[in-house]
Amino acid sequence: MAARRGKTPVFNVICVAQAGRLEYEAILFARSFRQCNPDFPGRLLIAEPQGAKWSIETRISGPVRALLEEAGAEIVPFQNRHFGQSYPHGNKIEMFEAMPPGPFVFFDTDTVFTAPLDRVRFDFNRPSASMRREGTWPEPQLYHAGYTAIWKSLYDRFGLDFESSLDLSHYDEHWERYLYFNAGWFFGADAAEFGKRFEDYAHQIRWHTPDALASQSLDPWLDQVALPLVIHAFGGGRPGPELAGLDGEVSCHYRALPLLYARESDAAVAMVEAVAAPNAVKKVLKAHEPAKRLIYQGKGQKLRAMFDRNDLPRREQVLRNAIKRAGLWLR
Figure 1 (tube, helix red, strand yellow):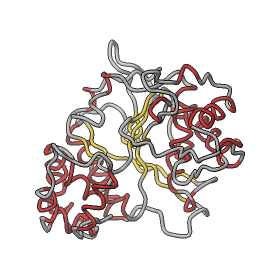
Figure 2 (cartoon, rainbow, N blue to C red):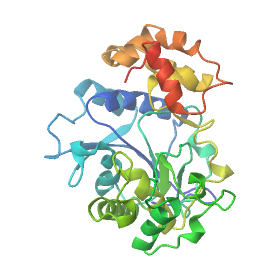
Figure 3 (cartoon, rainbow, N blue to C red):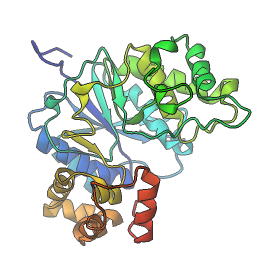
């Protein structure tokens, strides 16, 4: 793609959606993106998984497809060759085979936009990803390999320099010392090359697992295990302040509508309710039970009133449990 003089090169925005929950999240994603970025020069691409690796319908339904296309999104089908229904997180690995080459930014579909994306200064030659994560992987076991041995075995497998990936402000065997991302957003200079390496690394980790990972679960963590290795291989690393708008004033990875109402910003909640308000959207979105109850029946605002966003639990699971006790954990 051609670069604009003195500015970030033109890039594409990508997410993955399929029949069910993701297609309804994609409505909020696409419509909030277009509202915040009416003159976006790149393409808004929605990757749609298909193929024999699924025993359920994956194609986006007609009414949702119409709303997405009205928002300027292009739905691009791709074939699952490795993962599919057995590991849906693999969609964000396999989708790249259908994506055009060039710079890209990927977002999980459970993301809402609240400001223009041009407020974020992307350096596509230094890829990065979201740090809004917890220490979910690995889980070192007594008498088995620790954090250093586990991560170093992966860097060694792919011929990568392990030491340069470390954050030395954290002590040895503390999970934040090691390069680890949430895959809710990430970006790179070329979708084709990034995808090839992502698939290669994930495939090797899954089917030729290093001995140091013998006690570790890769489901659902495989994508988050491979991602930092890919980013490091392309010369990237932890995000700097120029990317603070992601997971900030520009985009919000809310993960689930109940969590949006419980903990996210007023701007994120207001945007979701605004883009869900038109009758044409309501007619489609109310078929999704979480949207019906939380957005249209007002239970989301009641849930929001239950929590002090200046004093939320540090661990997401604690917040989820509180929502479940209130009978409002809806996915």
